Length: 535
Image (cartoon, rainbow, N blue to C red; front, side, top):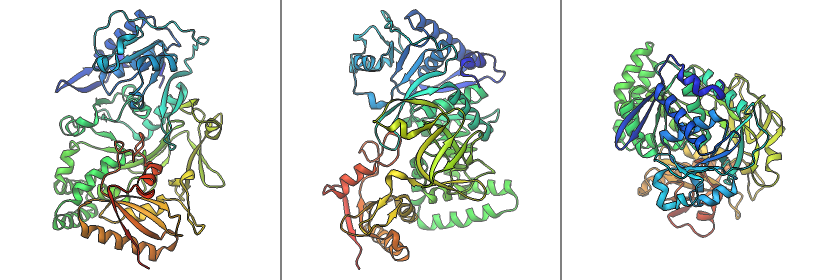
């Protein structure tokens, strides 16, 4: 693909792209002709405000059609988009404009009062009429006629600290092409996006959809299930917690129903006739199929480890859930797809990607063009630790390959635990073992300063079921007896789910181990009960 020609490509598509959104309670459909017309109108508007190639234009808004239109318009004008996540919601418009040298900031009209958004003439509303808008005429670098840098984004990464990245056009194009080649889109495909499109992964997906002729649904988490049920997407990208929530609903069925579903689901899987097996699975798991819209052919998850029990349930239901792996600095690295998938792995490498394993097992991703050319905002020394060559990125993840080329992630280098007894272990290993208990929703383990064993913070599926906690404790004790290297001396039961709202999940939906440890281990265990293993 060529991002410089994306708008004209949309106009010339024989397949008519459609973007579907919810607006004022109803579904609004835009065709490829509508998209092209609206992008060109946005280009004219931006130019009338004084936007020129190389200028920085910030966008701070939730998911909406206008976000996409202005993003495409900035690509067309070869201006740089600066996509702000909701981490920046507390900053004023003037603070954002000054700190990031913006010529213009685009915000939703709903922010007018809350942010005093129009104190500056360099602020415009995405979804309302504007008057008196004037971009700040900043001195731009020498014209980038090849449009090598297309914008700036922010990522929290594994550290939890926001990092600013400059986007390479060629890296973005390479990542889109590689993912699309493996995903193999079909003419009737429809991609659903509900995660914030300020997260660059989501923009990669809609660039792919618009270039390769795939229809697009854009919504937000509050309307996710309505979009699934009413608009019938075929492709979904969601974090593990979404799929785990469906597993929890299955677990909350009466025990006899779960037992019958597993037995009959296993029979459906083993039938020699695949169409007959799928038909039986659709009948057995009708509610799950209907909740997903009835047409789903590819569900992708990543961003954090997925529980094996979740993957096994979706396989039992014959709903196509696959893990993937990538990072904003580099782009997509590996992907499981129908016909080439291995449970527990993140898949085989995407076309054009190589991986080298360092002496300590760290995954070094290699490709001619990576998504991020560099950081423009990060902790001291972080850029040198991550970008270790013109085509190489140190991921910070430890991994291994099997004999068939499937990549398995073991854990994060920085999160390795060293117990008081001197044992080194990646926390994901004992967590995976504990999560195998059907009554566990999620676990997090830490070193115990007073013992060579570990401490586990466990979220039960039913936090109010005392008998379930006893069974979980027994399950953990059995792990400790069978595998002394991951013995757990104390289990702390959390009464609250891990979420962004309580700070236990980072913006990228990965566990914030530091905050969880501070809350449960440092004398502030409010909202939790504990049990200690007897000798």
